[in-house]
Structure formats: C-alpha cells, structure tokens
Image (cartoon, rainbow, N blue to C red; front, side, top):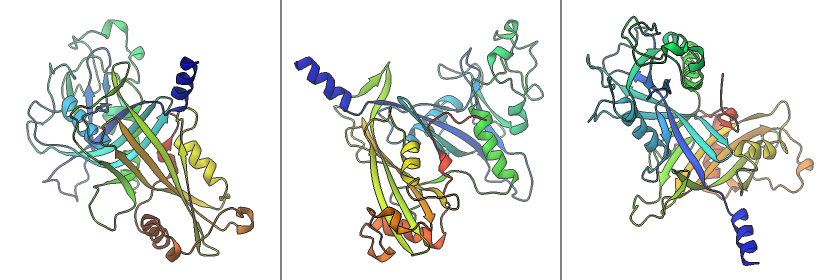
Length: 367
C-alpha cells in the first residue's frame, strides 16, 4: 500500500524537465555605417564530428541564473576564442518551444566583432566545438541540410577535396547542418530585415529596468546561492521543476471593459502552454478578434532547481457579455493588480511591441 501511495504522489507531482537555450546570433559593429547595405551575418558553430554545423546552445544548467545566462554561456563556450571577454547580448525571445519533457528558449542575440582577427573560435577547437564562423543567409542556404546528403566518403576530417559553402573564404570539412534551426531562425531574422519589419518575438527586458517596460520577456532569479543545492537530473542532464501558468487578459472594445483569468498547467506532459492559451482564448475570440502575446515571465526559485514560467496572452474582441456570465468585467481603473493595470494600458495605447501567439509552440519550429 505504501508503495502504491508513493507512486500516486509521484504521478501527481510536477515532472522535472530538461530546459535548453539556443541563440541566433547577429553580428554587430561599433563602426558600421548604417547607410551601407551589407549582408547580415550570423554565427554558425562547427560541432564535434559527426554533428556538423548548428546554432550555439545547449542545456540550461543549475549554475545558470536564467535561460538568458545559459544562452550567453553556451555561445562563449562553443563559438568564442579562449578568454574572450566580449559577451553577446540576447535581445529577443524568438520562440518558446514546449514538447514532452523539454522546454527550449530560442533567442536572438547581438555580438560585436570589429576585429580584423575575429573573436570566433578557430580549428582545431576544443571539447565543445571545432570552430565558429560568421556566415550570410546565402551561405547558410548552401549548406547541406543533413549529413545523409553528404557522400559517406566525405565524412572525414580531411577537407582538402571536399567543396563546401564557405570555400571562397576558408576550408572546412563535413559541410552539413546538424538540424533545421539555423535555416529556421536565421530565415526568420532575414525576412524581418528585408521587409524592414520589427524583430520578431518579444524584447528581452532586464528585471528592474525601466518602470514602463511591461511588454517583453523577463528573466530573473530569486537567489544566486547554489550552496548545498540538491540538483535534479534526467539522463545526466540538469533538470528543473518548472511550474507553468497562463494569465489571459481580454479587452472588450465595445464595452471598454477587461477580464482576466489565470490557469496552471499541473502536468506539462499532458497539456502545453500553447494548448492552454488556445483553450482559454477560444472562450472569447472570433474570426475578427485580435490575439497575441504581451509578456513571458520566467522566475527561477531560490533552490536553483525550480522555476515558474508564466505567459500573458491577450485578446481584443467585441464578444457579448451574455456568453460569459461567469466572467467578471472591469474598467481599467477597477483592475486591482498593478501589472494587469499596466498591461491593460499597453493594450489601450498600442505601445510596446507585442508578439504573435505563434511564439509559443508545442512542436519544433521548422521551415
């Protein structure tokens, strides 16, 4: 009986999750003339054979304060020369992917590299990677999509007779992409650049920054003290108990009133945040409604192995109140929560770059 009770308790408890951070890094320059139209460059990391080329990124570790810190650490470890003190800056959260037992944060970052001798790692590299390169969108598209597209006799480290997409500038072996992510996320950034559009995703905002910044992606940690930490692992990787919440804000523009509601995801292997957001929005929206994402908030707990991840979708609609008799509606001034008041003000003024709801995904984002 004791065994049965313990098993039921474990099944009812939140399951630990592997969390990952990836970075789509854009090259920036202090001396670049903004009037000059130059091809945007991105970082590709040449991983240890036989993985090929990919974005810098990897598992979030317990020592990382936030997913942003993990993205910076992984970029330095995999792409930078030893002792590099020039750190990349994560500017936007492009995508938040949640699949069974895994959460991935994909960031856009900027990295200043003005030196004639680049800050990027050179061959033979180290245990993390072989090297890293600045590449254009055209060059990324010249890579083979998978290793299976390369003849087996060209799988060796000897690249002297192996043509590859960067052959005009250097010579590199096994020119294939490990997976779709470089094409997907560089393509996303390239599209916004060519369309003179805003950067996709939510702006990464420092916690405690400007008081009027409430729309964006916020990452914080309650404490950085890891002493005596009892860590969680899954198959040798750091794992976290991530508590998931969805806080919906609805604005009825016909009656100029707001409604808010919050739901939790107790078992993320049964329902993702995107599924929960869609389920909550379906009560209020129609084909003419406007929806999107105002805010993502990630707070790591003091113990370093738990975190709370909250998403804030919104809907602007003209739904009739009689269909929502169990929902309370308020004017902006009647909202009691300060953050709700601030987000409501953002919806009314249209200030702040909100994100498309597709930033939340329950499948891997692939072109």
